[in-house]
Amino acid sequence: MAGRKGSVLSIESSSVQDYVKAIYASTEWQGGDVTASHLAGRLSVANSSVTGMVTKLVDLGLAEHRKYGPVGLTPSGRALALAMVRRHRLIETFLVTELGYGWDEVHDEAELLEHTVSDAFIERVDAKLGRPRRDPHGDPIPAADGTVVYPVAHRLDGLDDGHTGRLVRVSDDDPEVLRYLDSEGIPLDADLRLGRRGGQSLLDLHVGADGARALTVDAVLARALWIESTTPHQGCTLAESSSTQR
Amino acid sequence: MAGRKGSVLSIESSSVQDYVKAIYASTEWQGGDVTASHLAGRLSVANSSVTGMVTKLVDLGLAEHRKYGPVGLTPSGRALALAMVRRHRLIETFLVTELGYGWDEVHDEAELLEHTVSDAFIERVDAKLGRPRRDPHGDPIPAADGTVVYPVAHRLDGLDDGHTGRLVRVSDDDPEVLRYLDSEGIPLDADLRLGRRGGQSLLDLHVGADGARALTVDAVLARALWIESTTPHQGCTLAESSSTQR
DNA sequence: CGTTAGATTTAGGCATGCCTCAACATCGAT
DNA sequence: ATCGATGTTGAGGCATGCCTAAATCTAACG
Image 1 (cartoon, rainbow over the protein chains, first blue to last red):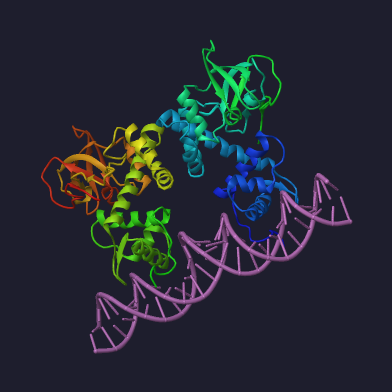
Image 2: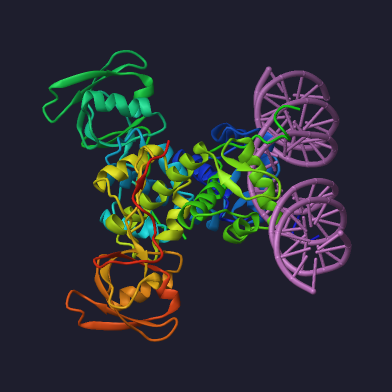
């Protein structure tokens, strides 16, 4: 009656890692709680599978959960999640920088490799890349000690007309978005200015320091782009500054 | 009564790949038959596990096997094996060339990565490395179409006194051997000359074009080194020339 | 030609990790 | 307070891949 059911899972299981990562991603970026069904959707898994796995995570000391409540991470769960995120983003950066992958192609490959590669591999990649702070999509790469520095950024759909800033992050949830930006020649760090809103969900975006080029942005795109402001703002803030984990 | 038992395994299973690779390695290098127990030893698996898996390989059209007989590969089994060997050796080469691994450190990492990485990854690595023909240990890297060019080499323990040649392959079975060669400063392609045999299993090896340095070689080492002769020879030939698969 | 040692195969199990289905608990909102 | 959405649990399954133990076969020896 000590160790629950037969739960013999370890921290090395890639399922465990995926669950922890999913909880982290849903918890720390958007803030707020993760529900079991949210996780089920994100992981493309049945609801009851989540319940079962979360029980194991709790047994492993990685997650916190009371019945019918939201799922959260313990400090060591967060540490594991950060380690996995670090792996993922370093691998993505490596694939783009060293092997010529497009930023729209790296996610799936990294998703597999992050579970396979050794710590030594990650360390060597990190060194070779010069200890990068951001991955190809602008996501911050946690340091080996768990420190993450989030850019002070705002999602495009939360900003006002006339706002100017620099594109510092593109969500890699949708490779289509990435390919679209490629086709429009808009890279990370591009200077942007918001034009007049064209309705509830459409807005104009002027590209380049001179704002010469303009394009119309739909709701999907607007939710994928994060801008670091050069004008005062209000709205959806991505994160304030830095945090340390362990 | 059609598809045997429920065997739904695919060619993607890393176990399947490991078994096929093991059969290939035992069959094509040393020549001759592979027995089930040989495979069991090589794969550190129980005997009966081999039987079960070989049945699946036969179902998949990868292996040939009659009860109580030796195990062999079908053409598509050989093609799969060569693809895996290619992956393994390209990854090893990549780790050494691009990430600064030592040649004694790459085997295990490659063993994991070869099952994970995509075809696109392999292609990009191959291109980045300039389509290498040999891995860090001197093993030939099969081309994408299954062509392999084996060096015309002889194992050191099958050569006579006074023989001269170039070190073209070191077995990576034993990382100790690799580290020893490192410590003695003997790289691949070193010029070597066999000195007087010191007994049944000991022999002297002179290193460098001038043969200035000499060391004593024991049986273990002698079986790990392959030499491309610059003098006439006889004895254990590694392979004759090239072969095409597919 | 038997016997027997060793190799090989079968049978029965275990662990992981996922699934569905169905019964039930809980929460929140009307 | 009751209904419906959301969460939990258990039973029953499936697939992979490994194990041990016992049965069976082969081959080599006297």
